[in-house]
Image (tube, one colour):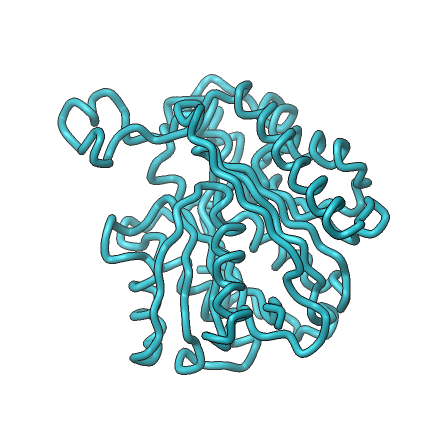
Length: 342
């Protein structure tokens, strides 16, 4: 039995943070940002009373609505995030409550930074493939604006807020998730991390004063490893499944940086028209980037298309999914944008 994606939902905050606005906050420029990252604007959830679970719930509701199911039909919710509403309860538990899911449903969070959605999708597929569950919601959601230092021009230009959700169900044919790879290596954890807030450095006046509760990244170190690791994912799929660049209809890469995406695609031998991009509009939404790409390109996907999902994230973590798309996206009913934005 294969697990197949049968529906996709998303949520994006209404407010936009443009490069022009960032020029007023830090020493940067629109040209500098676009040239080095490809980003023009990013979405920000400014309401202090709304957090990651709110965005995740909105995305999940859209995915369920498009599939014509209700919360009583959901067995499991997995949320990939590094910006949970709180340490506990889990964001997934809050989403289940928001959805008013049935008593037997359960959920949990996965923290793998930008690789989070890949890890969550791979995990969710196991529950479907084993026959334990029939419908699993996998959500990638992050409110990155809460951990971004807007005095640090090297990181504040990159990140935005958003959420994407997919519904996993048993496939009735050969389509669905075929292969996956997942890796973790904390040897160079300090190159991309958030030092404060955990049991090693619990929150104190000192950790706050030292700005340890903001994301820290050493861009040059991350760039090289990210390209090599994401290319390694596709090489693995090629060896295991006999795939070439010609066999792949779409590459759905994590939207970290335009340069990383371009270098990865080139290393994989995949042409530009096969690469899904939305980084210019949303920036890096961490665990949400891949499901947001799936949403934006859904109507271009045809049943049986070979898709490669690849990501690299803090920790370091990296991985990928090889799947055959399970339905014709062109048959999806036209979307009501008012339901998926504030």
